[in-house]
Image (cartoon, rainbow, N blue to C red; front, side, top):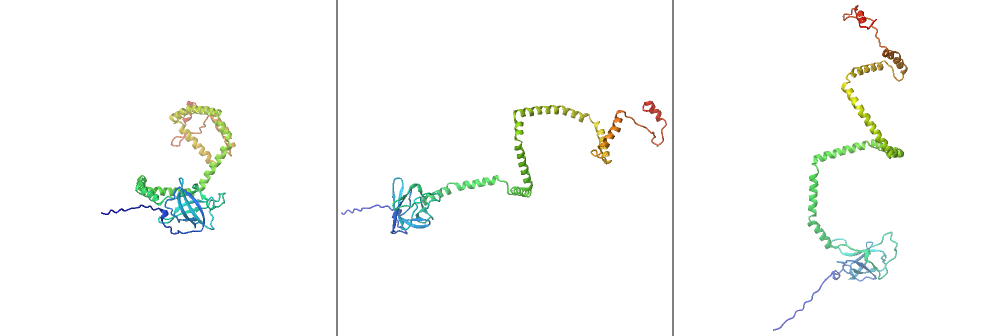
Length: 320
């Protein structure tokens, strides 16, 4: 019996084992770029600067907690000493490449990288891999976020009033805004008035401080107490007048008729003050001091003179 021994070998493949579409020798000088991760970056990948291909990745090797990318820069191209680098992939199926960006205008370092120099880890960045992006997207879609957004929108719709009331509210707001826009002059006048008031208050700051000082507070306290005392005395008096002052009604009506007659007579109390003074002094005052009435004649309802009235008045003491 023959025994056959079969030997098998295992192998592994990585991005660096894949052929690059732009692979090939390139004349130039070498630089290194330190990244925290260089996943899916194959050898031969492009090195871009200002949108132009200036070199390619020669080797990817691991270091102490970093990944060192060795690149060949074509002759005639210079990489700024303060440049930054990023591993990018423009499309889902696009090639991964190294993008070098020039420093900002505020950067004082104007040197260029010499052969063998490197861009340090603090000036490089690794873009998230396609797998990580798809994983995050899957978590977003399947994690219930979209359903929660839909629920939130439904709750907002439940809280909002119906469409008719909302339209009425919008129409009212639109009318108010149109009215406000048509009366900006009034608004400006209001603002100017407030500004003038603020200026006046500011100019009288000393007086306001005095009013609000302890002495001023004491004054206002005493004044308010006196006002309350007088009001308390006045209100019962006013109440008694309203309750038993029906006798004032005829007097006030007579005074109203008298004032109306004065107005109709053409007398101006201001310009004709001398005439008014003479009337009061020569007519009203003597009548008040010694009131008397001259009875010229007395007639009956038929218009006939009454002969006995004089005797009646003499008996009453009204005549002599």
